[in-house]
Image 1 (cartoon, helix red, strand yellow):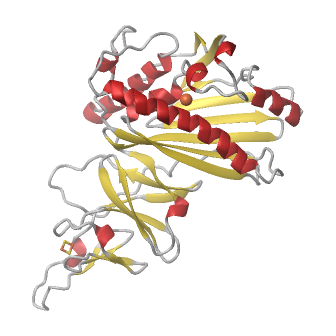
Image 2 (cartoon, helix red, strand yellow):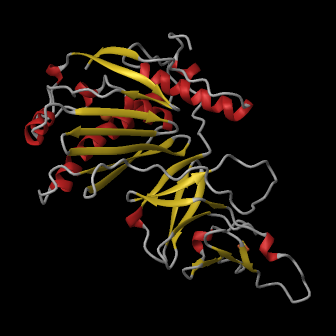
Image 3 (cartoon, helix red, strand yellow):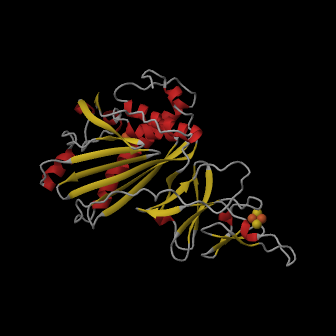
Length: 371
Ligand code: FES
Ligand SMILES: [Fe+2]
């Protein structure tokens, strides 16, 4: 892709990537025997948990006449639509009963399905697999299983803590994602006395390499100008700290920090809700400071501050984006954003025309910027 393309021609018009797992809801927002609504990629969902606590996801529309199934009654196993009482198995979506049928009417009830999605609980979140759209008029059938299990945060010891936080962003998933990987906004957006100030801006050089469907910022000792890292090195009594940051399609940013026997690992996702709305979910696991009673709260406080700064920035940015201004991506600070669009376009191309995935990053590369 030429380097000087304006942003518009690199943006696939806020198209969303189907055929992937997405985070739908924090797991603690869904109790046993309960239903909850969610929206992913403009698809309304009803989520629930059966009596065994197993989560499930159905399209929130009855296949009869479209009544949201979330308005129905759930007995822990089947959902009964509130309009005409059709009953559906919560996991498969298969119709179990149509109350209006008389014995002589031999409609094959079990051939009718409410739309259902593969659904898994992972690291405090309910994940839903959103498949590629089926051909128009195909109707619903038994859902195909997901090709792979839902993504999981890498963990490096048996005991660890886990915390999450989540924020709605009033922008397309593309702006959410490139905002997340953009290194140059740090000194301007994320100022805090205990982190860094605008004055600490300095030249940086980082090594990147391609990985399947994504790219990696290779292991290195993180910037020494931030207090938390200094503290960590002291505390862990480790000679070096290694950090790896991966981005992988469709929306996964994982960061792993290791210092001696201590580790911190996070998986951040930016999930398309609609074309113009997305949500950021940060889930972190760690075995650092496990003995501090306020560890998770402290960490949550720090993260919440960052995420709130990003959210607020994107809220303001969305004002500017409303009227379709001309935008640009520059080297090297916006190169990861260019790669993101390259990856996404390559994926859309494969989905449309088949063939091989054309990775936009051909080999290891060093990027330089000031931040
Ligand atoms: S709309 Fe659901 S049973 Fe008729
Ligand atoms: Fe940020």
